[in-house]
View 1 (cartoon, helix red, strand yellow):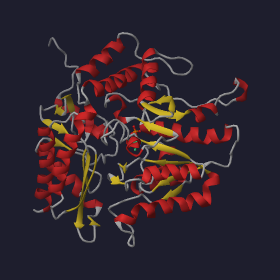
View 2 (cartoon, rainbow, N blue to C red; view 1 turned 90 degrees about the vertical axis):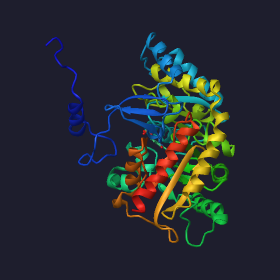
View 3 (cartoon, rainbow, N blue to C red; view 1 turned 180 degrees about the vertical axis):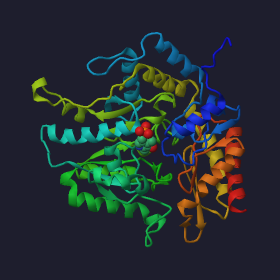
View 4 (cartoon, rainbow, N blue to C red; view 1 turned 135 degrees about the vertical axis):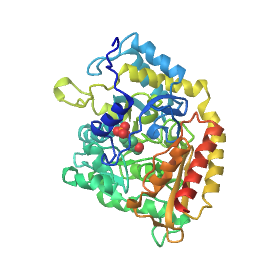
Length: 455
Ligand SMILES: *Cc1c(COP(=O)(O)O)cnc(C)c1O
């Protein structure tokens, strides 16, 4: 035979995928391989040639579509220069240009950029910077060593980010390894406490935060928050004004504000960054997922000048930030991130969003009338549909019933790839999604609810 088959067959790939590749957040005993071989725009193509719309942006990271010519070219051009340069004591033009661009577009006052490689590492960096800042600033506050986080928060899967996380089912197992944090309730507008109205929700949730701050501010280094909406919690929407008021509280009690925009950054909520909707500049801003348009693992933690200043000193003073990740600032990743930001301008991505957001809103309004739907939520081009057993009591379906997964499995038969958060169906397509694609996704969600819950 002229070609000894070094290439595994389709069935071989399926078998190896089932038996060797340990997939994230996946029960491997039940895993049915889905092997995507190619993609273009919002369409993914599997090894059997079947096509699927990428309705959750390959888990919230794709922005301008797959195989975007500008992004592909940026990556190739960088490859012709150098693939990797360490950020430990050296740099690269592409990395520098990206840092400059990020400072230009970020909320005013965030002037320094620390690169890492994933959302979780961006959060670890922010947590460590906050603590070290209080120890090293000219008026040190070494007792500030704890954090205030929100219920059901999700900030990544490394131990520091899990410590500030609050999703019971993912995080409870690891409790013996975690540091203690203070916890305020998630400002959830759907599942309000019994005596709280929607009108009173903002004041109620802020009062909960303030109660903790008033008692504990002397030992709190920072509050960490997912601005506007808590993604992994089930696209839990905060009341309008919560972020702005939180910023005021952190000022009053002398606590840093860390904004984790890993999920909501880069246009997802309708503005480049979610913080901009409430005119907020956090002290530390965590970015990842959409930063490279969904191409490469690059993350950034942006900091204010005040934080940066606290780390300056002579070599011997040891005020250095002793933290780094081998691939932080990787030029290939930074090249595609820079191109991602250029495409925002070239394609006027943000200007085209309001029409798509309105279209998604129409679909959600229709889906909301379904008796199995307890709530629909929307923030920009992020849509969520929460399935409930009982609309009046808001009683959820037991998670073991896998209602969300069943709807998504049905949608897959219609060529739409979704990934639910328990009973919450997530519609979060690339920002480049067309009207027709959005309609197709919404119809698949609606059809899936009808097919699986009304049967
Ligand atoms: C996904 C996510 C993270 C973690 O990012 P990774 O790149 O998966 O480490 C952190 N924070 C939020 C809000 C996220 O949605």
